[in-house]
Image 1 (cartoon, rainbow, N blue to C red):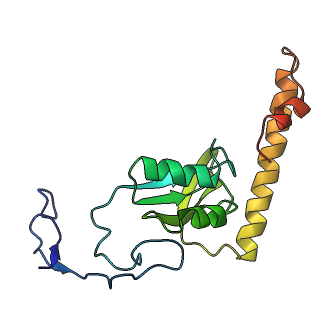
Image 2: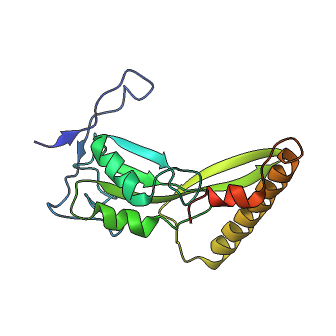
Length: 171
């Protein structure tokens, strides 16, 4: 009994229902636990979060803590999409070993469109691509400089110094 695409009352409702392929039991993707992402079978329908941050950008949890929270929340898939960083991928993958959770490696890239800040989510990128690594490093350095300048401006009216702010951040 093949899994079927559900019919929806929308512009897609006139499309024929067709069987979905099933994954081979025990097949896994190279990036984490669970069925291979190129197959539709057992991961449809699942509970997923495709936009989660860790302490490697502006999140408050380590990758391990995020995996634990995702499991506690009943998620089947969580994407680690830190801003301009792939630093949490390995820890999250290791933390998900032996669990039912699939960790999808992703990223949130910061860019500009005219004068607007635009954030673009990407998944399954090459974490060793030199051009991408250089651009992420440049973006993080600019962000760090902007933060330090903001603290200097705030320090005009409040008792705060850059070293105090740094002391509150994760290593």
